[in-house]
Image 1 (spheres, one colour):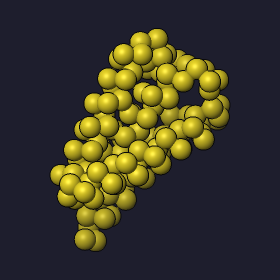
Image 2 (cartoon, rainbow, N blue to C red; image 1 turned 90 degrees about the vertical axis):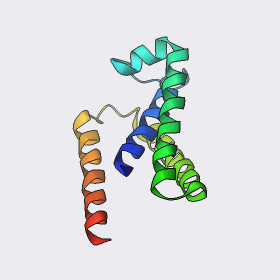
Image 3 (tube, helix red, strand yellow; image 1 turned 135 degrees about the vertical axis):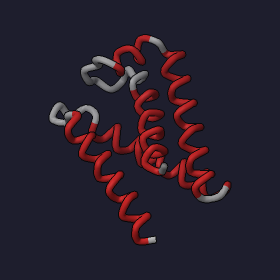
Length: 112
């Protein structure tokens, strides 16, 4: 459930990042469709952020969930701004990162 919340936070920040005209990177696929339709990109970003915040609130508590959601969102924003313009970043790296999150969540549930 926390991995899904982190992925929703990533989708939220990526939706807003696709609207940026100051960053020069090749827009294709999902990013291209979001960059052409600003209203859809903002809607995807808002809904994804609210869903991730809801998952964190259900997982922890209201105050802690909102705080963790904002912190995760800031971390995702920093990572996207840092790594998105690199042409070497492929889907395999992103899938590996998601796999790492899933393994960490499973290990966390097994230990605690």
